[in-house]
Image (tube, rainbow, N blue to C red; front, side, top):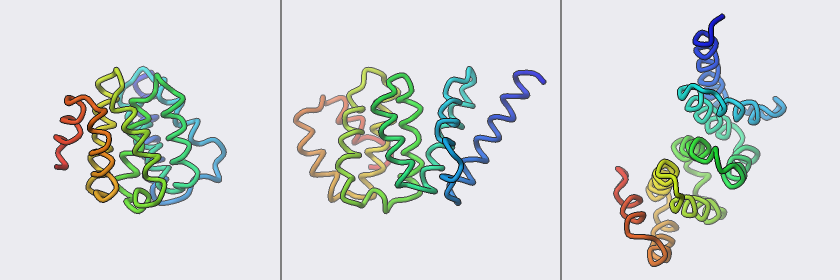
Length: 166
């Protein structure tokens, strides 16, 4: 089998895994999150993107286990931050209740820290997540933005506020 055929099968498998994970708790499958993260090493961008999508949707199936895992990985895996930051976007889009709990400040702090990243892609994805959360929980986010706006660069604040959500 050729590398292209293998990558097509892997791409499809990751997308299917994400769809299943969104609807069913996959935590009974040991280390599934690590298996998905291994796909970030693929030379094919569509595989990396599908892995990020799958990880975010798997988190929807069991937020307590996987969302905290993803947030920890974002902090500890510098080289994978861009791909890992796409995963919470899936959670935000699907499970708005998770971002209305008391730990939303921790999640916001993590995202705000990554809005200052040297990598433009990481900054953009973090800003997009913040923009989505602003729609869900403006009462918590807008005051936090006001406090942090004194610390943020004008460029960063503009990126956050100019996302299509406002």
